[in-house]
Image: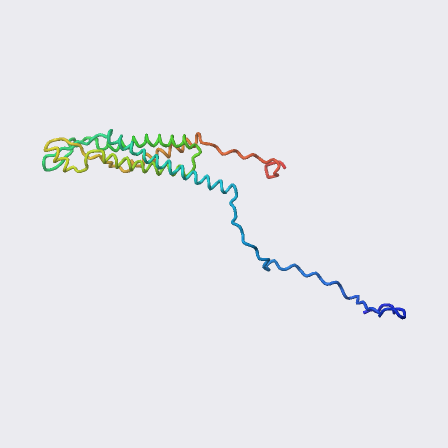
Length: 233
């Protein structure tokens, strides 16, 4: 403590000054983990424009895939009609007690499977080309719709052809034809693997056309001012 000079008579009372007294320190900032002021109700976050466009594009692709699958599946009706018309008939004969093949060395049964496979391959090539022509940009949903629709079309054609062909009740057909009279065997598909002929052909054609004539992604433009390795700064 230091004392100031003594004042003259009649002056104000002497004042004392403490040299060790300093200005109050400014308090430190509150720790970051202290809760801040209560925030008001938050508004729902809006999706970025790119995200909204991507979702809209995905929905559009799914709709297109559903339409493609439905149209291709319905076209299986035409395959069933052609198969029932063009498939070779297998002749049977009855002696009144049992039913036999009229020609045991005939290849009509194999011919039915071959006819279905050839027709399915043709329909697969046609459907794959048409889908690529109408929807050149493609996309995974469109390809999946094409494959699913093609398989459903094969199933529709198989069941329709059997329904349009000779009756599956061989005993009733033999009785109706009579003893020693030739009649046709039911139309059936012995090799079930031929049901995949249509989807495989459609997928192969669509893949080849997309690889040859599909739209290409734009080439990235090099940024010559980025200073990245290989690019001058």
